Image (cartoon, rainbow, N blue to C red; front, side, top):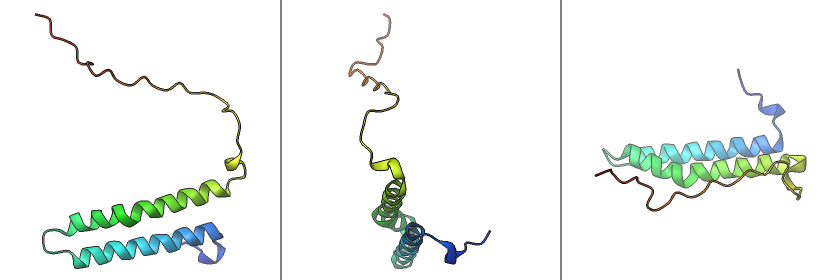
Amino acid sequence: MALDFAGLSLEEWLAAESAVLTMRSLMQAAQAAPHGQGMFRVEAALHKTGFEHLRKMLRAAVASHEGAQKKGSAVCLAPAEKPPRSGGAKRKAS
């Protein structure tokens, strides 16, 4: 399945551009990495640029949804899970 760039929306164009820039930074990190540190440097670049790319896509997706900015009560409240107790480990029977 080939991607038809002519039919992309503005949000999709921005996501594609961001993905290309992220890929370029990953490739540059791989090429510039000293021997034996390639994966470490690429993962560091991914943390620096890849997550920002995902945040941009998330913001664009939410902003494009009509009801995303509506305020009001939740349809179904979900109870929060109780935090684990600090002494949560069971004691061994003597």
